Image (cartoon, rainbow, N blue to C red; front, side, top):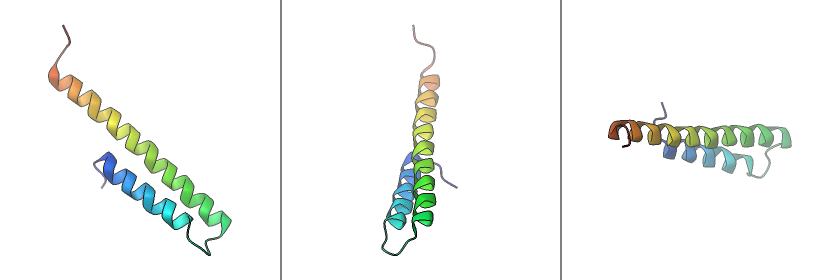
Length: 62
């Protein structure tokens, strides 16, 4: 299970690398790039969630 943005970005890079390999069909490459983009989006959401959790831990701003 992924728990950090870094893990998501690592997976995104792996899928992007796979899409760029020689011999991968355009159809397969398209899906691999789409999955990569989804992991990038998830990484962004993890970062946002971390920011919110940090803010809430600090308490209300005066």
